[in-house]
Amino acid sequence: MKLQEYVFSKETRKDTGILSFFDDLTKIINFGNYQLRVDSSVPSWSGAGGEFLLYISGNIKRLYFRDPTNSTWDYFSPIVATVSLTGQTGDITTTTLFTPTASGLYEVSVYMVCTTAGGGTLSCTIGWTDDAQAQSTSPAGNINLSVLGQATSGVVFIRSTAANITYATAIAAKTGSPQYALFIVVKQLA
Image (cartoon, rainbow, N blue to C red; front, side, top):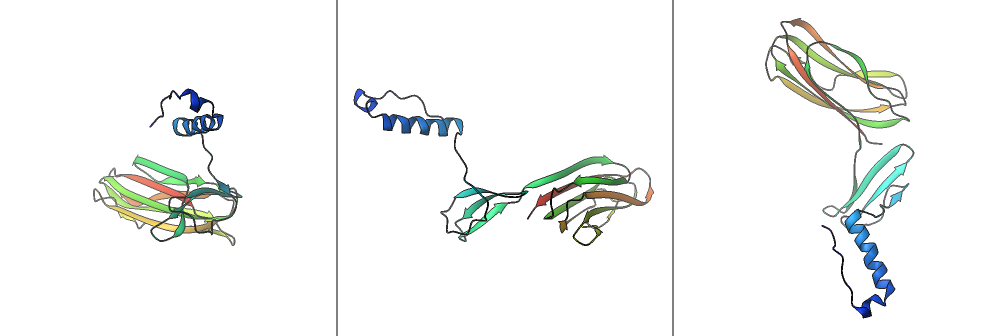
């Protein structure tokens, strides 16, 4: 929606306050020229439904919005990394997915599917370093690459220091020419 130019009466043109207000309103609607409230503390007041703000504290950035259905503040978790690979035919060596600039809590979602049947078992490993040591896990179960369409998914929550979050895949007992697709999404939670 765009506001068109209006021709004001001679009397209205004398009121520069109204003209200034209309000019500002036109800029906001036509050009998206507005400011979003930015705060460095999590909202705790009773806001109006639909109210929103940008929260920035260190390396954490969130868009908070007031949910009128349950009178709480909620936020969108920023996606910090994605992987979208199709037509994969072999192992993927340890590959950096994301490198945090500071310690934080992350959600890692993995989805794997066999796109061309062959043989073998596919696994995916997520690696990171928490406050104690290097860690790894396989959030999605293994899939049988002899079954076209065999798929699995899983989610893991990790606490990572400012060290690489990685992924790797491996095919055990590979036979024939199986292919698979791998999709990973990393969200920063805190």
